[in-house]
Amino acid sequence: MSDKLDQILILSSQPDFKERLEELRKSTLYASWFRDDIGERDKVRNVVEDVSKRGDEAVAEYTKKFDGVELTPEQFRVSEKDLEKAHKQVDSALLKSLRQAIDNVRKYQKEIYIGNFKHLGIKYTPIERVGICVPGASVPLPSTVIMTAVPAQVAGVKHILVVSPPRYKGTIHPVILAVCCELGIDEVYRIGGAQAVAALAFGDRKFGRIKVDKIVGPGNTWVQMAKREVFGVVDIDSIAGPSEVLIIANDKANPAWVAADMLSQAEHDPGSAMLFTDSQEFAQRVLSELKKQVEKLKRAESTIKCLVELSKIAVFEDMYDVVGTADAFAAEHLQIQCGDESRKIADRIVNAGAIFIGDYSPVAVGDYWAGPSHTLPTGQTAKFFSALSANDFIKATSIIEYDKKKLAESAEDIIRLAEAEGLDAHAKSVRIRQEK
Image 1 (cartoon, one colour):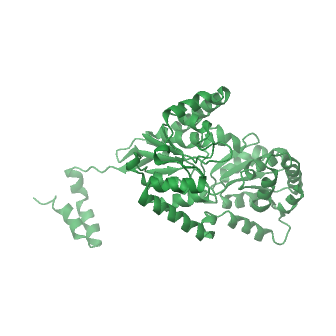
Image 2 (cartoon, helix red, strand yellow):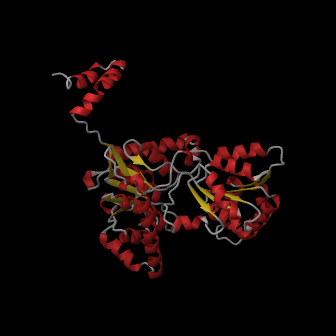
Image 3 (cartoon, rainbow, N blue to C red):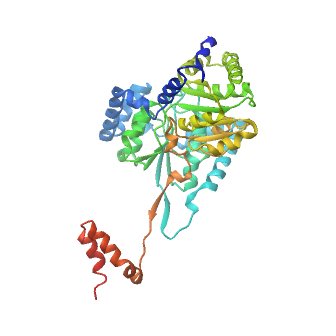
């Protein structure tokens, strides 16, 4: 089965090299899935509109339809008793690791928090209510709660709501609940999908849930489409596509490690992994490692599919072209494994969600431990979106305070500009203060 991977290797010497690279770049473009599936978009829009009109009664119907779980609106919210029970039952060693991860993220977010910046002309205040989407994958994702909720807490968000589909025995996986309890989040709802996004955006006072001001967190296509639909009613972090990694490596890197890093993203299904290098020999060694390692994975078949359909190993003529093309791809995760040159190459990169420098910085370190949030821009949106941080949970209010003397010094200029735009009432509002 792994022999299929031979087709992912492309060489600069091949006549269609640039065309294949451009095809690959286009396949990763921002929300390509959104443009390609108008029918799905219309379905999502219908769900969002229905929830906006009928509230939690509609959410209950869609939860039964899409998740196969029958809940009344009164049953959506997880009780404090269930949260505490999950917290008590979590493995002690796992809880210790979770607590350290939380501490790491909290420390990093405090260090970069712009809300500590003081200036007379601006005031920073936290967003009041934030909703977090946690996917209901086949395995629990407690790291998603940490990487979204902790930055919000550092920013001073007062009310954090968590939604996650009831995919674990008709409810949310206990590890997710345990992390919520550890973080002091007591408003957790066992709902997911587009209907959960709409429920967060519009609220339902009949059942005691007030709408949020911002929605963050990952999710499937329907979740991302729904976030786009409600944008403007609430703020969102970004519209994220499948997870991706782009690795820049030369022959000084360990091919087994590079292969392992590629597989760690491809196993997401969907997930893409690309290697850009200037050494054909190194590329062949990585390809051999991919074939060897993938067969041992629990998700070998789906991982191979992602490698074949969404991934490539590209061999360029030189490292200059490697870096330039990598920057154009603006990957979610960018790893650089080029020995002593790794830091210099990183300094040349402008577009990336997160950069992992050196042989000992696999993406997993960022996913779980280092401190920056793993909620990152995908599909080349790193050209204008940033990694989620505490700074995304505050808003800036401009402060303007003039006294009589200062206004007098600027009055004629302000009046002149207002009259140039034909806004005589604007000009009058300044002139009247200058009249004796």
